[in-house]
Length: 316
Image (cartoon, rainbow, N blue to C red; front, top):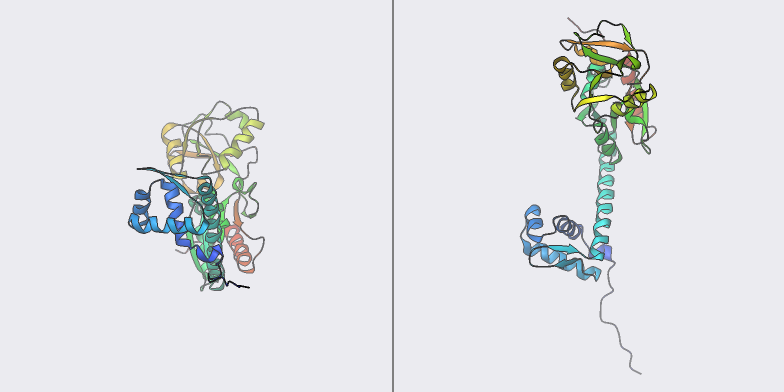
């Protein structure tokens, strides 16, 4: 009897034969659909890029690209790997950011996502009080739109997001809590026929022409439109802007109206008056977080809420 022994080494699992570099290179080619452009964006030459792709195909035992003289197209296997890479990179990014977040918590460092308009509600003073109470606390302020804050929270890039009430609906798995209650008011030019009123109802605004914040930047515009629809009319929006400062400038120069958080009045913009709204449309400043509760963030949010409610008098 002849007994033959297999001289080949034990095959390593794919996870040990395929490197993250291979996947990064593959993903870049898949996005560009050209080796030359992908190599340029990766800051390498085509030769090592092609070698990595070939090694990846050999390890998987599949063909990932259909090639011609200029472009490449993903095969069925390539399309599947492209989808898997997106998931892998997303999980990797989230996991690494979670590690960084854990280190921030240990070092008393907090990444805050915010919109600039919350400073008009006294956030600057509240932030100063918080820093005085916690001198060893490091606060990193990152100005982000509400949607970008939500993405950053899910990826653990920021610890808390500060948004308006309208941006706290349908946010699962994120959590929200109100820090400062605020209502919407009507902003209109001082020369407008309704500017002398002490209060206005939505019905009285049915024929008005509005300037509003872009809906992709603020869910408050959609919330206001819903209230107008409930009042029996559709808003006539002639212009949408990104920044609150631009919104107030348009009101003063074009004669358009808007519905904004009451704290906008603290900016004292020339030729713009703010009138109370009969209907209640919430404009609360709310905190978003990825976890329902954490000792550090809970304590800081409680103090921040108190500071917003009880602003300190500025020193002479």
